[in-house]
Length: 191
Length: 141
Ligand SMILES: [Zn+2]
Image (cartoon, rainbow over the protein chains, first blue to last red):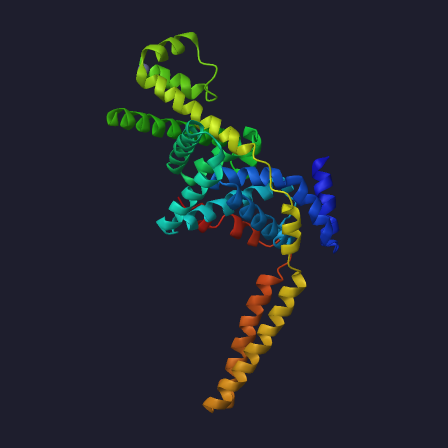
Protein backbone atom coordinates (compact mmCIF):
# COMPACT_ATOMS: atom_id res chain seq x y z
CA UNK A 1 0.00 0.00 0.00
CA UNK A 2 2.69 2.43 1.14
CA UNK A 3 4.94 1.33 -1.70
CA UNK A 4 2.17 2.13 -4.20
CA UNK A 5 1.70 5.52 -2.64
CA UNK A 6 5.40 6.35 -2.88
CA UNK A 7 5.53 5.15 -6.45
CA UNK A 8 2.46 7.19 -7.33
CA UNK A 9 4.15 10.29 -5.93
CA UNK A 10 7.32 9.48 -7.82
CA UNK A 11 5.30 9.14 -11.01
CA UNK A 12 3.85 12.62 -10.40
CA UNK A 13 7.33 14.06 -9.88
CA UNK A 14 8.56 12.39 -13.04
CA UNK A 15 5.64 13.92 -14.88
CA UNK A 16 6.88 17.36 -13.80
CA UNK A 17 5.02 17.94 -10.53
CA UNK A 18 8.01 19.05 -8.46
CA UNK A 19 5.81 20.09 -5.53
CA UNK A 20 4.73 16.45 -5.07
CA UNK A 21 8.20 15.76 -3.70
CA UNK A 22 7.25 17.65 -0.53
CA UNK A 23 4.98 14.71 0.39
CA UNK A 24 7.90 12.30 0.26
CA UNK A 25 10.06 14.66 2.30
CA UNK A 26 7.37 15.07 4.94
CA UNK A 27 6.75 11.33 5.04
CA UNK A 28 10.38 10.36 5.61
CA UNK A 29 12.02 13.42 7.19
CA UNK A 30 11.78 12.17 10.76
CA UNK A 31 13.31 8.80 9.90
CA UNK A 32 16.08 10.35 7.83
CA UNK A 33 16.78 12.91 10.55
CA UNK A 34 16.91 10.19 13.24
CA UNK A 35 19.35 8.22 11.14
CA UNK A 36 21.54 11.29 10.68
CA UNK A 37 21.47 11.86 14.46
CA UNK A 38 22.95 8.38 14.86
CA UNK A 39 26.00 9.50 12.90
CA UNK A 40 26.48 13.17 13.75
CA UNK A 41 24.91 13.41 17.26
CA UNK A 42 23.82 17.02 17.04
CA UNK A 43 20.64 18.57 15.72
CA UNK A 44 22.11 21.28 13.51
CA UNK A 45 24.39 18.92 11.59
CA UNK A 46 21.66 16.29 11.37
CA UNK A 47 19.29 18.88 9.89
CA UNK A 48 21.87 20.02 7.32
CA UNK A 49 22.69 16.45 6.40
CA UNK A 50 19.00 15.51 6.10
CA UNK A 51 18.48 18.46 3.78
CA UNK A 52 21.42 17.34 1.62
CA UNK A 53 20.05 13.79 1.52
CA UNK A 54 16.63 14.87 0.28
CA UNK A 55 18.09 17.22 -2.31
CA UNK A 56 20.44 14.51 -3.57
CA UNK A 57 17.60 11.98 -3.62
CA UNK A 58 15.56 14.35 -5.78
CA UNK A 59 18.44 14.87 -8.15
CA UNK A 60 19.02 11.12 -8.41
CA UNK A 61 15.35 10.17 -8.49
CA UNK A 62 15.52 9.32 -12.19
CA UNK A 63 17.96 6.57 -11.20
CA UNK A 64 15.51 4.96 -8.77
CA UNK A 65 14.35 1.90 -10.65
CA UNK A 66 11.63 0.78 -8.27
CA UNK A 67 13.30 -2.60 -7.69
CA UNK A 68 13.22 -1.90 -3.95
CA UNK A 69 10.95 0.32 -1.89
CA UNK A 70 11.67 4.02 -2.12
CA UNK A 71 12.33 4.10 1.65
CA UNK A 72 14.98 1.37 1.32
CA UNK A 73 16.70 3.36 -1.44
CA UNK A 74 16.46 6.57 0.59
CA UNK A 75 17.81 5.04 3.82
CA UNK A 76 20.70 3.47 1.93
CA UNK A 77 21.54 6.86 0.49
CA UNK A 78 21.22 8.45 3.95
CA UNK A 79 23.70 6.06 5.60
CA UNK A 80 26.18 6.41 2.73
CA UNK A 81 26.03 10.20 2.83
CA UNK A 82 26.25 10.21 6.63
CA UNK A 83 29.40 8.09 6.56
CA UNK A 84 30.96 10.48 4.04
CA UNK A 85 29.89 13.44 6.15
CA UNK A 86 31.54 12.16 9.33
CA UNK A 87 34.70 11.25 7.41
CA UNK A 88 34.93 14.82 6.16
CA UNK A 89 34.22 16.13 9.64
CA UNK A 90 37.17 14.18 11.03
CA UNK A 91 39.42 16.35 8.91
CA UNK A 92 38.15 19.50 10.57
CA UNK A 93 40.61 21.19 12.89
CA UNK A 94 40.47 20.36 16.54
CA UNK A 95 39.61 24.01 17.18
CA UNK A 96 36.24 23.39 15.60
CA UNK A 97 35.76 20.40 17.84
CA UNK A 98 36.43 22.49 20.92
CA UNK A 99 33.97 25.10 19.62
CA UNK A 100 31.32 22.40 19.23
CA UNK A 101 31.83 21.27 22.79
CA UNK A 102 31.74 24.85 24.07
CA UNK A 103 28.52 25.58 22.17
CA UNK A 104 27.01 22.48 23.63
CA UNK A 105 27.96 23.66 27.12
CA UNK A 106 26.28 27.02 26.42
CA UNK A 107 23.15 25.45 24.97
CA UNK A 108 22.74 23.09 27.88
CA UNK A 109 23.59 25.85 30.36
CA UNK A 110 20.07 25.78 31.77
CA UNK A 111 20.26 22.28 33.17
CA UNK A 112 21.87 21.32 36.47
CA UNK A 113 25.59 20.63 36.61
CA UNK A 114 25.06 16.97 37.57
CA UNK A 115 22.57 16.36 34.80
CA UNK A 116 24.88 18.02 32.32
CA UNK A 117 27.84 15.96 33.47
CA UNK A 118 25.80 12.79 33.14
CA UNK A 119 24.65 13.74 29.66
CA UNK A 120 28.20 14.60 28.60
CA UNK A 121 29.49 11.31 29.97
CA UNK A 122 26.76 9.37 28.17
CA UNK A 123 27.52 11.18 24.97
CA UNK A 124 31.23 10.47 25.30
CA UNK A 125 30.58 6.79 25.93
CA UNK A 126 28.30 6.54 22.92
CA UNK A 127 30.65 8.39 20.58
CA UNK A 128 33.65 6.31 21.58
CA UNK A 129 31.72 3.07 21.29
CA UNK A 130 30.47 4.01 17.82
CA UNK A 131 33.87 5.25 16.66
CA UNK A 132 35.34 1.80 17.08
CA UNK A 133 32.77 0.18 14.80
CA UNK A 134 33.47 -0.55 11.16
CA UNK A 135 31.44 1.42 8.64
CA UNK A 136 29.02 -1.46 8.06
CA UNK A 137 28.63 -2.13 11.77
CA UNK A 138 27.94 1.56 12.40
CA UNK A 139 25.28 1.61 9.70
CA UNK A 140 23.69 -1.56 11.06
CA UNK A 141 23.63 -0.22 14.61
CA UNK A 142 22.07 3.09 13.59
CA UNK A 143 19.45 1.52 11.33
CA UNK A 144 18.48 -0.93 14.04
CA UNK A 145 18.69 1.26 17.15
CA UNK A 146 17.91 4.76 15.89
CA UNK A 147 15.44 3.84 13.20
CA UNK A 148 14.08 0.67 14.77
CA UNK A 149 14.21 -1.17 11.46
CA UNK A 150 13.50 -4.88 11.64
CA UNK A 151 16.38 -7.20 10.77
CA UNK A 152 14.76 -7.89 7.40
CA UNK A 153 14.47 -4.16 6.65
CA UNK A 154 18.07 -3.75 7.76
CA UNK A 155 19.07 -6.55 5.39
CA UNK A 156 17.22 -4.83 2.52
CA UNK A 157 18.83 -1.44 3.14
CA UNK A 158 22.29 -2.95 3.44
CA UNK A 159 21.70 -5.34 0.56
CA UNK A 160 22.55 -8.38 2.67
CA UNK A 161 20.88 -11.69 3.40
CA UNK A 162 18.87 -11.77 6.62
CA UNK A 163 21.50 -13.98 8.27
CA UNK A 164 24.34 -11.70 7.24
CA UNK A 165 22.47 -8.66 8.57
CA UNK A 166 21.79 -10.37 11.90
CA UNK A 167 25.41 -11.40 12.16
CA UNK A 168 26.58 -7.87 11.33
CA UNK A 169 24.33 -6.40 14.00
CA UNK A 170 25.55 -8.93 16.56
CA UNK A 171 29.17 -8.08 15.76
CA UNK A 172 28.39 -4.37 16.10
CA UNK A 173 26.91 -4.92 19.56
CA UNK A 174 29.78 -7.19 20.58
CA UNK A 175 32.37 -4.65 19.51
CA UNK A 176 30.53 -1.88 21.35
CA UNK A 177 30.48 -3.98 24.47
CA UNK A 178 34.21 -4.71 24.11
CA UNK A 179 34.89 -0.97 23.83
CA UNK A 180 32.79 -0.24 26.90
CA UNK A 181 34.61 -2.98 28.78
CA UNK A 182 37.94 -1.41 27.86
CA UNK A 183 36.72 2.01 28.95
CA UNK A 184 35.41 0.68 32.25
CA UNK A 185 38.76 -1.02 32.87
CA UNK A 186 40.82 2.08 32.10
CA UNK A 187 38.54 4.33 34.19
CA UNK A 188 38.94 1.98 37.12
CA UNK A 189 42.72 2.13 36.76
CA UNK A 190 42.51 5.91 36.80
CA UNK A 191 40.52 5.89 40.04
CA UNK B 1 28.72 -16.71 37.75
CA UNK B 2 31.92 -15.80 35.92
CA UNK B 3 32.45 -12.30 34.47
CA UNK B 4 32.65 -13.78 30.97
CA UNK B 5 29.24 -15.43 31.45
CA UNK B 6 27.78 -12.12 32.59
CA UNK B 7 29.21 -10.41 29.52
CA UNK B 8 27.69 -13.03 27.24
CA UNK B 9 24.32 -12.61 28.89
CA UNK B 10 24.52 -8.83 28.58
CA UNK B 11 25.28 -9.22 24.89
CA UNK B 12 22.35 -11.60 24.42
CA UNK B 13 19.98 -9.19 26.20
CA UNK B 14 21.14 -6.15 24.36
CA UNK B 15 18.46 -3.89 25.81
CA UNK B 16 20.21 -4.56 29.13
CA UNK B 17 17.02 -4.62 31.16
CA UNK B 18 15.98 -8.25 31.15
CA UNK B 19 19.05 -9.86 32.69
CA UNK B 20 18.46 -13.02 34.69
CA UNK B 21 18.58 -13.18 38.49
CA UNK B 22 22.01 -14.79 38.53
CA UNK B 23 23.47 -12.09 36.33
CA UNK B 24 21.92 -9.37 38.49
CA UNK B 25 23.34 -10.95 41.63
CA UNK B 26 26.74 -11.16 39.97
CA UNK B 27 26.59 -7.47 39.06
CA UNK B 28 25.79 -6.61 42.66
CA UNK B 29 28.95 -8.29 43.87
CA UNK B 30 31.27 -7.55 40.91
CA UNK B 31 32.23 -3.91 40.42
CA UNK B 32 33.60 -4.47 36.94
CA UNK B 33 30.42 -6.06 35.59
CA UNK B 34 28.24 -3.54 37.38
CA UNK B 35 30.09 -0.67 35.68
CA UNK B 36 29.93 -2.44 32.35
CA UNK B 37 26.17 -2.89 32.72
CA UNK B 38 25.73 0.75 33.77
CA UNK B 39 27.75 2.04 30.83
CA UNK B 40 25.76 -0.24 28.50
CA UNK B 41 22.51 1.24 29.84
CA UNK B 42 23.95 4.76 29.62
CA UNK B 43 24.75 4.28 25.93
CA UNK B 44 21.26 2.96 25.19
CA UNK B 45 19.74 5.81 27.18
CA UNK B 46 21.65 8.34 25.11
CA UNK B 47 20.58 6.61 21.89
CA UNK B 48 16.97 6.81 23.11
CA UNK B 49 17.33 10.55 23.77
CA UNK B 50 18.95 11.29 20.42
CA UNK B 51 16.35 9.43 18.43
CA UNK B 52 13.53 11.27 20.17
CA UNK B 53 14.74 14.63 18.91
CA UNK B 54 12.08 15.94 16.54
CA UNK B 55 13.02 16.98 13.06
CA UNK B 56 13.37 20.79 12.94
CA UNK B 57 10.38 22.67 11.54
CA UNK B 58 10.57 23.86 7.95
CA UNK B 59 13.01 21.15 6.89
CA UNK B 60 10.71 20.32 3.99
CA UNK B 61 10.56 24.02 3.06
CA UNK B 62 14.34 24.20 3.10
CA UNK B 63 14.54 21.09 0.94
CA UNK B 64 11.98 22.35 -1.56
CA UNK B 65 13.80 25.70 -1.80
CA UNK B 66 17.07 23.88 -2.47
CA UNK B 67 15.83 21.70 -5.32
CA UNK B 68 17.32 22.42 -8.69
CA UNK B 69 15.45 21.95 -11.90
CA UNK B 70 17.02 19.29 -14.08
CA UNK B 71 16.62 21.82 -16.92
CA UNK B 72 19.08 24.10 -15.16
CA UNK B 73 21.72 21.44 -15.47
CA UNK B 74 20.94 20.97 -19.13
CA UNK B 75 21.21 24.74 -19.66
CA UNK B 76 24.51 24.79 -17.79
CA UNK B 77 25.67 21.93 -19.93
CA UNK B 78 24.95 23.79 -23.14
CA UNK B 79 26.76 26.87 -21.80
CA UNK B 80 29.75 24.67 -21.06
CA UNK B 81 29.53 23.11 -24.48
CA UNK B 82 29.54 26.52 -26.14
CA UNK B 83 32.39 27.71 -23.95
CA UNK B 84 34.44 24.66 -24.83
CA UNK B 85 33.78 25.14 -28.53
CA UNK B 86 34.78 28.81 -28.35
CA UNK B 87 37.90 27.89 -26.40
CA UNK B 88 38.79 25.26 -28.98
CA UNK B 89 38.40 27.73 -31.86
CA UNK B 90 40.42 30.43 -30.06
CA UNK B 91 43.14 27.96 -29.26
CA UNK B 92 43.29 26.91 -32.87
CA UNK B 93 43.42 30.50 -34.18
CA UNK B 94 46.00 31.78 -31.72
CA UNK B 95 48.22 28.77 -32.05
CA UNK B 96 47.98 28.78 -35.83
CA UNK B 97 47.27 25.08 -35.92
CA UNK B 98 46.66 23.28 -39.16
CA UNK B 99 43.15 22.39 -40.27
CA UNK B 100 43.66 18.76 -39.43
CA UNK B 101 44.71 19.58 -35.87
CA UNK B 102 41.64 21.84 -35.54
CA UNK B 103 39.42 19.00 -36.63
CA UNK B 104 40.95 16.70 -34.05
CA UNK B 105 40.42 19.23 -31.32
CA UNK B 106 36.82 19.77 -32.30
CA UNK B 107 36.08 16.09 -32.17
CA UNK B 108 37.84 15.86 -28.80
CA UNK B 109 35.59 18.66 -27.54
CA UNK B 110 32.56 16.87 -28.85
CA UNK B 111 33.70 13.67 -27.17
CA UNK B 112 33.91 15.50 -23.88
CA UNK B 113 30.44 16.93 -24.39
CA UNK B 114 29.14 13.46 -25.13
CA UNK B 115 30.62 12.18 -21.89
CA UNK B 116 28.99 15.04 -19.99
CA UNK B 117 25.66 14.49 -21.71
CA UNK B 118 25.83 10.78 -20.97
CA UNK B 119 26.45 11.51 -17.32
CA UNK B 120 23.80 14.15 -16.81
CA UNK B 121 21.14 12.90 -19.15
CA UNK B 122 21.46 9.21 -18.44
CA UNK B 123 18.28 7.24 -18.85
CA UNK B 124 16.69 5.43 -15.92
CA UNK B 125 17.83 1.85 -15.76
CA UNK B 126 21.49 2.67 -16.22
CA UNK B 127 24.05 1.34 -13.81
CA UNK B 128 24.99 4.68 -12.25
CA UNK B 129 22.68 4.00 -9.29
CA UNK B 130 24.83 1.07 -8.23
CA UNK B 131 28.02 2.91 -9.09
CA UNK B 132 27.04 5.78 -6.89
CA UNK B 133 25.49 3.90 -4.01
CA UNK B 134 28.00 1.10 -3.75
CA UNK B 135 31.15 2.88 -4.80
CA UNK B 136 34.38 2.09 -2.97
CA UNK B 137 34.39 5.62 -1.60
CA UNK B 138 31.27 4.93 0.35
CA UNK B 139 31.99 1.40 1.43
CA UNK B 140 35.70 1.35 2.22
CA UNK B 141 36.50 0.36 5.76
ZN1 LIG C 1 32.02 -9.77 36.93
